[in-house]
Length: 195
Image 1 (cartoon, rainbow, N blue to C red):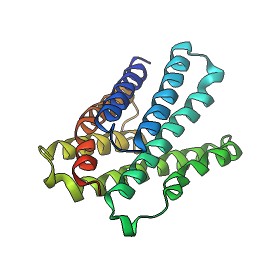
Image 2 (cartoon, rainbow, N blue to C red; image 1 turned 180 degrees about the horizontal axis):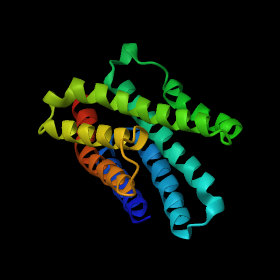
Image 3 (tube, rainbow, N blue to C red; image 1 turned 60 degrees about the vertical axis):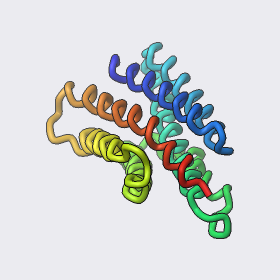
Image 4 (cartoon, helix red, strand yellow; image 1 turned 90 degrees about the horizontal axis):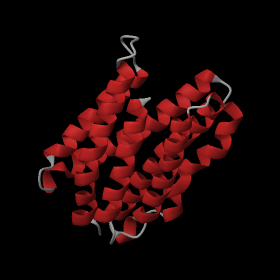
């Protein structure tokens, strides 16, 4: 429980940092507000700690990952030249998953596959951006550290080698470390390479 609360607090901090660093970029402020709101709701539900709220917490965390994926898609759009940009509405297509999630929320395997696929997609997009732009920003190696933290957290969560109560807090701490590092360094990519 303490690691979940810490992870939500770190993500709230990361949203504020990303918003402050990207104040000139048109779209991410709305996404930062959205992610901030969903995290605040999740924080309140985690503290309440009631069993019926477990599905709502799961849905809010899925919403956070979908909004992060949208933020990454908008980042890719802003990094492209004007003549080759896709319409901005395409960046919001991951949000179409939310209405359909209610149909298979009762199936454990479909929930597992959906959550893992959304997180893997966000990680894959972030990996592509890091490998493309790491050497063009100051201290770009920190993006590799955040990527390593995110990959480690992903592997510990979805491919558990050991079933232990110790794994979940370590996963949350690794994800939190990745969020802190990337919230300070990732906006540098957009600020320096926005076209």
